[in-house]
Image (cartoon, rainbow, N blue to C red; front, side):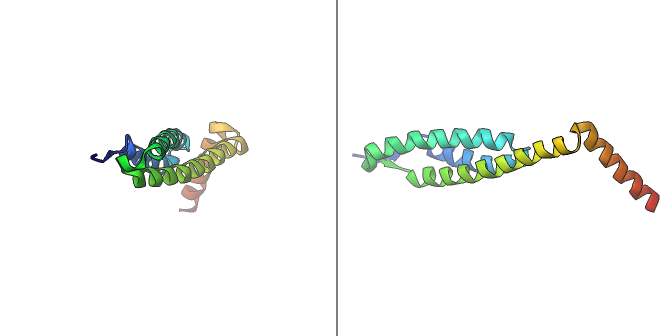
Length: 110
């Protein structure tokens, strides 16, 4: 019997990569892509374990799962640090005031 590509194996890998890249967007996109990749990887692993001789592409699933976990951790750190920054500086207004203060100091020193 001819071996076929495991369903969504390439997509899982892509979502794993996007979860790492998405941690730069305050963590939200990274968490979304990471969760989707992990759910899809779980399903693909179940399909592969049922009949491993029928499918290829399991390496993409394993790699995508590892990347998704890394992306989730980085995204969670990014999201938590963003929330902490908002709380510490009194919301967006506090952050803008701090930036304006720094810019004024730079202009005065020139």
